[in-house]
Image (cartoon, rainbow, N blue to C red; front, side, top):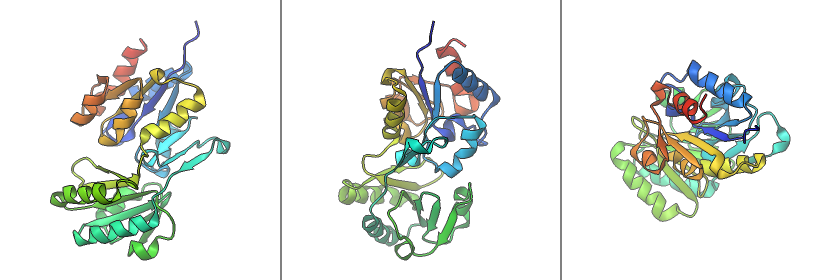
Length: 270
């Protein structure tokens, strides 16, 4: 009997990746087995492609990938599939930089695909963002940014995060969607309004002709909410935030307890 293919969408940090940023042997082997059985596995992450390519290669994937929470979707193995890059208007970004400065934020970062721009020099954050060797420019973003921007990160003081977010909602809701990173980072992430992981996933399901009820998505953070709601089977990780568990159909074990592998073995009776 021929199995109907599923699309299995995996977030990386806090989900597929253990806390040491590796993929466990059991996750790898379950994913390999499901792919051999004709299912599709894709990565859907807030990371840029340059910082997710090592995991794509490690799993031997040959599917499109969702990066920057849906602001960039492409197929690493097939140029003709298309490159979907949705960016933020540069003038809006410049306004947001001005307001962020008035809150004396720690830093503001802008990413244009593989180019990373830091408003201020920042050893701590540079470590986080240099995976995959991007071009890094440090200095006033209003001078250095010459093109529309894939995403903006505002690293603020914890007590200022709610005020900055309410300004973004009040003034820029038409243009910008913003989310908060998980502790310990007090980071607000901005991408174009209406863009999220589900938008990227929908392109992939249409490409493979897979209905929503045969989509399984795993996530742990608020950038996974739309994707879990979109999937016929949305799975929150045991280490996920409460909001994700509330919208999910199932809660798996944590990323440190092989949540994905345990869930998929059970779901597909492997």
